[in-house]
Length: 234
Image 1: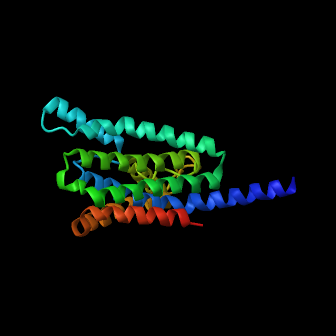
Image 2 (image 1 turned 180 degrees about the horizontal axis):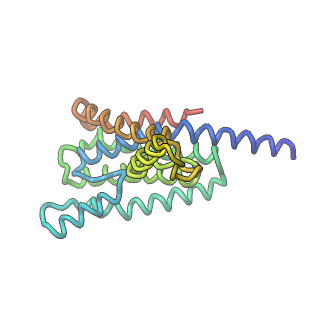
Image 3 (image 1 turned 90 degrees about the vertical axis):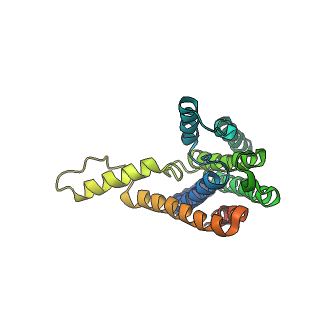
């Protein structure tokens, strides 16, 4: 009984550390994947599925060229989430152990994306089937990250959708500057945590822009390498 309690306490401590250290790194990865996918694979949002719905709606109303992958990204995202849930359920893992398993899954998906992109050069035809396939692999990698946060790191805030982080950063800053009683609840996300994710995502986009201009399809090596680093985080 005492050993079980000690193991539970150790897992809780490790999970708390992962919740503090992983999200900024995952935000950088999300920024890299989203920018690289949008810039090289036919303007497809790989981390922001909502953006693909908006783009498809704009084309339907206003006309213009349409990339079939923009709509396909939605069911692929949902299917990947369900698959990751099944993996988590079958593993029987929880907490930090589950987090490490899902980090490995994300790394494998990003490594597969890198290999596929280097071999097929999807950026050469952003409207083609190879670009669409690469975009779906990227969407799957981001779905893994979303599932990781929800299933294994429930205390962590979003690392890909920056609207909430930006809003929280501004509101938290206003509360800090206000002379009166703060309006945000005491358990809301601290300003620093939101800023770390926001700045991490922006840095990921900037780094991806430089990588795409220099490396082309090899730019996918950056998020793949960082996902390997995430697996090794202690």
